[in-house]
Length: 252
Image (tube, rainbow, N blue to C red):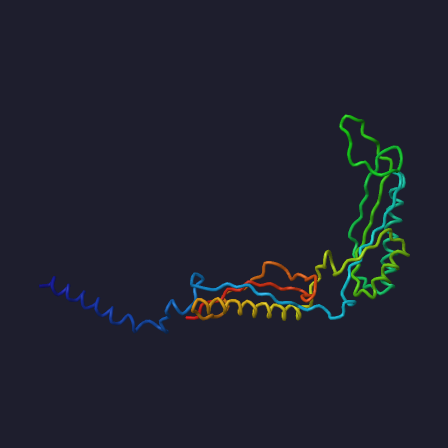
């Protein structure tokens, strides 16, 4: 009899625990389907936006590349190096006087290369292993600057200023910061507009895919860009191109 009573008591407690448990839980019970999962279906599309360049072609920034060369014997290396540095400083001052911002002028290289042979001729890059190496008879020095020039209107003035100050060679390139079109990006505001346009373009492309598959597009799950803004070379796409890849959720 005692065994039966004990069994009945355990069964009663077990049933009571089952009845009480839902009442003890606090807050709403969330369904896993409410929060989108990274494994749930999605649509990925690419979009492109353009930060337009200035309408005035003469206002496009330029990069000026300036080089100074000299040749000297072994005894005159220090003196030639000092003279070259002084000449580069003089060129920088001349550029600033011509209207080029000082913070846009950079030292890009200073090289000293040996020249072989009995005279100060051209360097011989290939040496026959079976021959006695020729002695170094002279050295060639090369120093270089780059300068960001605000517009083509200022370009000729800057080139003349550098040449008159002692530059050996002067070359220009469209764009600021490097070839072929530079690496200095547009302003943050212009990039934001271009990025917004790229996201809108991606959504348009994704909506077309969703409609074709009988689905509706949801919110943005992720967005990325695999390359920096690139300057387009030719009209009608003159400006900086921004490319994004966007993954959208499928509307539930």
